[in-house]
Length: 110
Image (cartoon, rainbow, N blue to C red; front, side, top):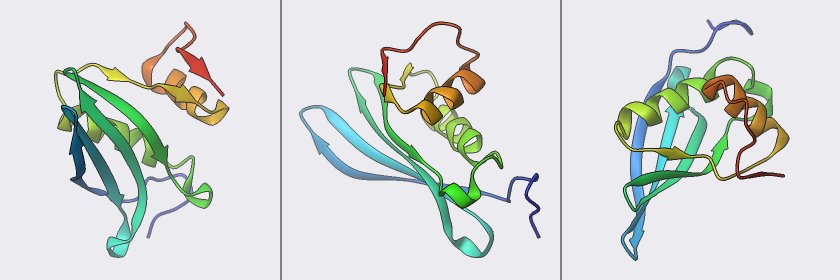
C-alpha cells in the first residue's frame, strides 16, 4: 500500500491521438495500483521539439512524485528532443522550477 509520502508504483503508456500539419499529438498516461490512471501529460511533437500542453495529476494525489515521474517518463520517451513547457499555472511553474532548477522566468505563466 502507498503512503502519502511515498510515490505509488507507476507504469506509463504513451499513445498518439492525432497528427496534423507535421505535428504529432500524444498522451503519456501514468497508471497506479490496480491499473487506474492517476495522471497524464498531453504533449505535441513538432519541429523536432516537445511542447507540453497539459500535465495533470488529481489534486488528492499531488505531492507524491507522480508529476515528476511523468516528466521523467516523457524525457525518456522523447530523449534528445528539447522540451518546451509553454504557458503555466502557478502550480505548473513551481513544478517547472523544481524539476528544471530554473532561475529564469518561462515564456509566460498564468
